[in-house]
Length: 117
Image (cartoon, rainbow, N blue to C red):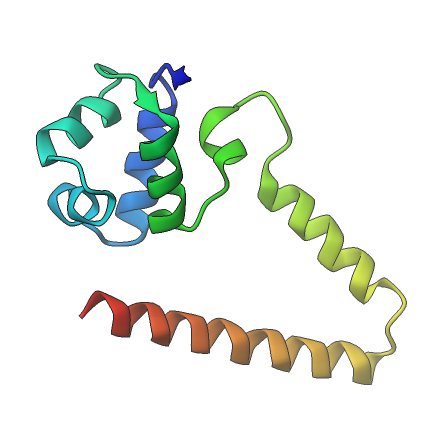
């Protein structure tokens, strides 16, 4: 199965830049040539499932997010889930959960930074 890269390439490029990765760095991570990745980002090449999966893992995004633009964003779904979790919490519980979430975020970013070195 191959997916047309229009839109997908734009989302890959945006997420790659968000992660502060060059095309060469991402290409190495997903085992394709930099020129092939450039063609994907520019909509000149289709993307196979194998490469799609490696890109989703490298960029830590869902395949749904990359493939579809006409469904609610994964972020919106996750935000609703977080809202549901916090909805019945008292202020002390909200504060504790927020503190845990911030610590988890910091730890994940530190690990990502270590992995990029």
